[in-house]
Length: 322
Image (cartoon, rainbow, N blue to C red; front, side):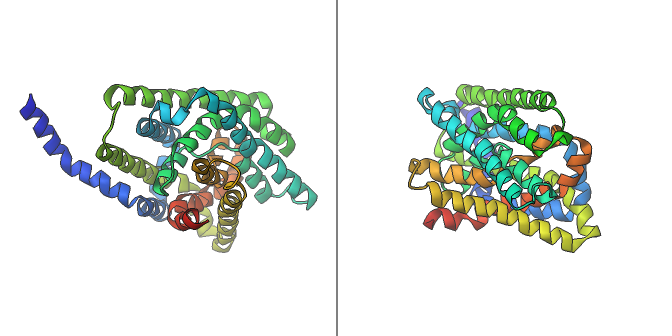
């Protein structure tokens, strides 16, 4: 038996080394995923129908990497996490809608897209992003889980403000509850498997899991870039405008959030919360909104992947000195 264990460990060594390499160079791995999404539009289009399954898989991997106790935290943390999620998913989009309304822009497609982005919960990869930038992933995982659970409720006021063309609140609630079921199944399975097979992981094992997370993120982004190809061929200048908008929205939110809260909230939570403020799972609305609306939003969602996946590479310096 001991000889068999030694053989397994020897066989796994190359894989462990490869995953450790991915973990160490994770920021560049995300760039490779973006490049594939831009240069392989056929592959991106083929992957698009599988995005929900891939997102659930990433959530499972993240839950397995972090574990239940670290990601969910103590019961006494719940009020704080709920408040953080409500500020991010309800207060910010309502503020954004009011600001656009004051300037007469609330009917513009770009304004609608930004308000929807602000109303969306955290991306599934936010704990991975926190890890890549040297911060605790647990606060990001907490806000991800709680924010997604609250999403059906927090999204309703925003959708009602944006107009009846987005469908009834009942439809949005139904879709949101389905998403919650999928997310809690994925995280529950990850937590359970971690407790059974890896209750006390070593540093090397955690690094391997970080490498798996990087690979999953790099694969998923290829499918998320499916909306960029058509507009790149039809109107490159228009695409540049969308790219400028999403970079300003994503990076601007992160920078302003971090500068605003770093002396208010506990230090381990400031960076993860700021990362989430600019990186939202806006693609979740594709399942709830009418096809005519979502078709117009696809270019925003595709361009939005650029600052999202470049966050660990371009903003790591900011979270170090900000």
